[in-house]
Amino acid sequence: QQPVQSPQAVILREGEDAVINCSSSKALYSVHWYRQKHGEAPVFLMILLKGGEQKGHEKISASFNEKKQQSSLYLTASQLSYSGTYFCGAMDSNYQLIWGAGTKLIIKP
Amino acid sequence: EAQVTQNPRYLITVTGKKLTVTCSQNMNHEYMSWYRQDPGLGLRQIYYSMNVEVTDKGDVPEGYKVSRKEKRNFPLILESPSPNQTSLYFCASGRVVGEQYFGPGTRLTVT
Image (tube, rainbow over all chains, first blue to last red; front, side):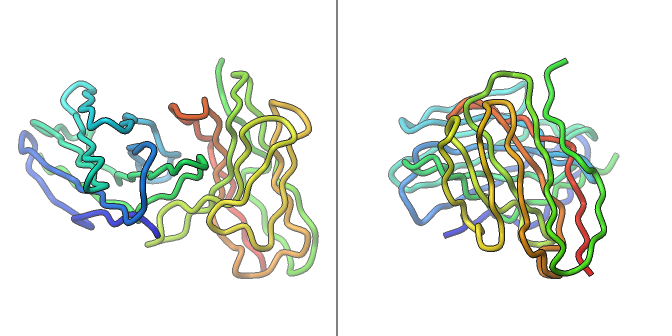
């Protein structure tokens, strides 16, 4: 039932783009994206609701394909500060939030 | 300052000794939840609460109890801790479908 995130890890050079995918086997009410740096608590990036909205946050945007129960997080022109582990959370109609195992992103100068 | 506080931040205890981890938020949020985080498994929701006196089981509720007597507080209770409950625990609060604010985490070791 845990959403499947891919890739598990990715290494980029500063300025390159990345896509992180999140796929759920159950019907979703919303998808939540967070970033966690080592030794810190997760920090909110964005939420996507049913309807396939694409939301943006600086150079980070995301989409939600309701039919496929998939969401993708797009990081454009990555910066060193983007390093960390990215988690997607899938919220169902009971407001239970189940998280993916995370995607570790390493940005090199 | 808007924040979620957890206490204690670090705890080492022995098997079977009841413990409580407190969580408090000052943002008047309805939704509060507890997570445990283990390497390779990501975050797993233990319990969540939509409002006062309303709590629901998350993904991994076994061995844990919660209560929501006041809107701002959501303590996590381990009646009889076992070594497999050694983990990093996060409390979070937010609007029901909205940004969640995480506490700093509590690192629990059960020997």
